[in-house]
Amino acid sequence: MSHFTRALEKVSSAAAWVGGGLLVLAAVLVCIEVLVRKVFLMSLGGADELSGYAFAIATSWGCGYALLQRAHIRIDVLYIRLPEVVRAWLDLVALLSLGLFLAVMTWHAAGVFVFAATENTHSNTPLKTPMWIPQGLWVAGFIFFGLVIAEQVGRCLSALLRQDWIEVRRTAGTRSIKDDIDDEIDPALAGPRH
Image (tube, rainbow, N blue to C red):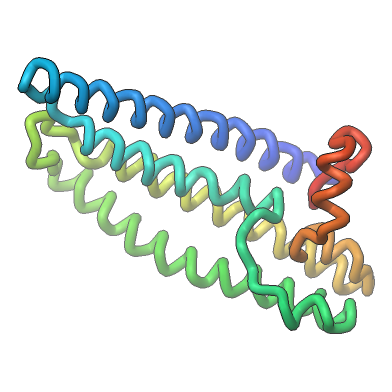
């Protein structure tokens, strides 16, 4: 495993923890908001806005972690019945398709961020949040996800050139029931999840 891959794994793991923390904080904030409204008949203001930012940022940063853990949902009814070589090429096609979709989405998200930054837009709420802050963090998560996809595509191409179908499956294939069982029995013995 390359240093770049290990660095991506460390960053994605940290991002997943931070994203999870953001979601927990957002849930706590919304609960406090509900209690304050019920008990004191007033609003703190901004709980829904901040929780929306937290969700968007956690989602964009969490996608890289999910890809490295092979946790994205794929419909594999036909896939698991195909020969290993066909599955390996389908795994590459899936990664390339995901990369193309992400490129389009990131392009548009970056346009929104650039507009917010150059026009100094703020939310139309009592918080008056400078929109470039949450949108910048959101776009940065997509860019990181793109780096993860590029790294995975590179690993798959290298394995395909060596005709190492198993390495392609470990990198980008769907997780098997055996992979899940091995992780549950003893995660230390299961090794890397890719």
